[in-house]
Figure (tube, rainbow, N blue to C red):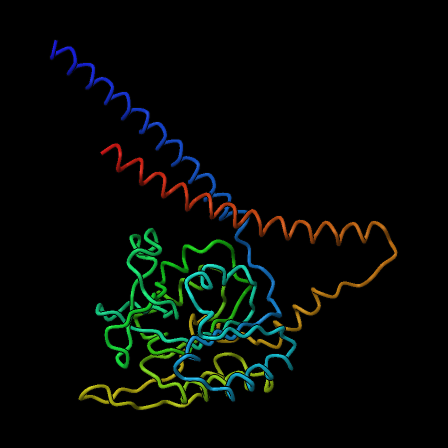
Length: 329
């Protein structure tokens, strides 16, 4: 009798494993199909956007109203619709929604830190760390915790490069200006690549530590050069000063850098002009012409929605597939 029960149990277990295997194969097939469609049809570069964001996470500890007002004015005069985010606004949810706002220029006045591996750079939020919050993101390496030397024992959520990689949607040929320490350390370009993978075309950051007054000054000057003086990104970045700081017993040098090399000759005023031209189509009384414009707008919106849908399906399918694998094992 016990042998019969044991055989039955084993048969049920095998049947359950077969079902899980079938589900896993189906989900894997869906992921492959959606990924191919996403790559071939939905990942085309989007047009540059005349929206800009000043993400002032440093505002809580190092406020600089002059920087805020000056940069806001420079961007506005160049034709951007500017949104300013205070320090308390910059939480995990903010970063989850960042790409959906279609910013052409994103200025990250935020702390960033180099991990003990001396390679990975994370972006700080202003949200205090909790081991019970965002458990999936923490478990999968999208979020980590960080602390400041001037606030011992207090921790905040920090955004890992993998977090940016996993965001739904695409950036509109954006330019990212990361103002924090090590934001573009040589050999630590994962954060820059994460933004580029999501559609950014240029990423500017610092090669080592930098203090707020210096990064504020250089970022303000950079924006003047690219938006008022019509300089290319590389020419403007090369105008930035190199700073020396004491770090423990050694002196380190830090300067602005630009990534990738293909972005060196980008002229932002040209991008602005292209965006303006695409936003102001010629009016026509011809019904066929009007229908053409409406169709183009509808297709553009549908493309954006399909991109987000495809990436969301991939994320949830992968998570479900991992659960199936764990159950099967």
